Image (spheres, rainbow, N blue to C red):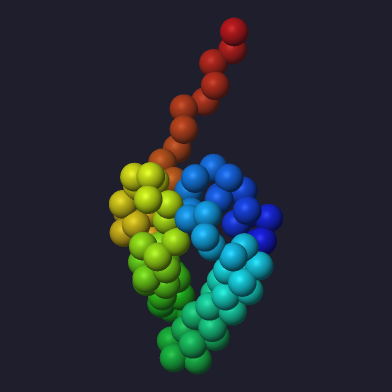
Length: 91
């Protein structure tokens, strides 16, 4: 997670001021907590919704100011997935 955070910083996706190690530890703990609470309360029936909600809260605080994706739209990728890319064409 720490390496992914550093990569995201270098690609100007998240703010340079984010401490990569601290964010990695926070994210793992948050993700684990979301899964545990969902397991206890709903037998994980709502785990994807809870993960999406977690990202809706986290993303606005970490996205780089020049990263122009909508945080809510990004968090919805949890449940909708990325759009399929066309297959590469042969040269």
